[in-house]
Image (cartoon, rainbow, N blue to C red; front, top):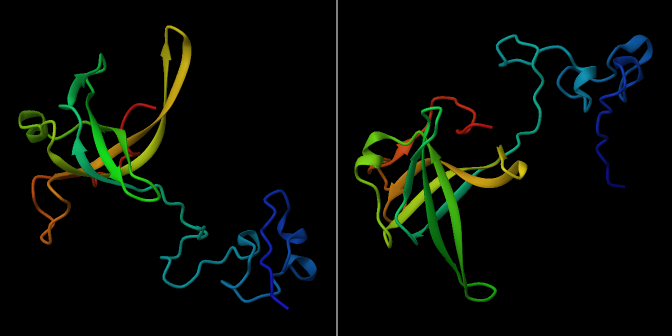
Length: 178
């Protein structure tokens, strides 16, 4: 009979959680409980902190295609600079079609501003999808957008990892005002 994994109920206490024995003691060895609240002891290799390991959520976008227009650079009242790209991506399956995907890069490097790619150039972006909110004449608005953290000209990353790209490794929240 297949075993099903129970999800922990965040509204319960350790005493009422699955896997807890009498007196609130875990009934399984540290690190084997399915309920993070029932296993508060740090596991080896965690540096002694009490953080629990949660499943990793991934928000990663890779887009490669051709620019359908020259990029638009803009500086907001706050002084923040952004560049917007329209990337044409051809899909062949299940039927031939073309999508034009808007991509935004917040605080792009100076060399991208000084020497931007042009319409028709092959480009490669990696980043994530973000929902951005702002106040407009019609009230509060929002939209999903692809926020690029890495840009490269050509067909994609080369073997050396160099090649005119920018990689945002500053630990920021993904760029742009929320």
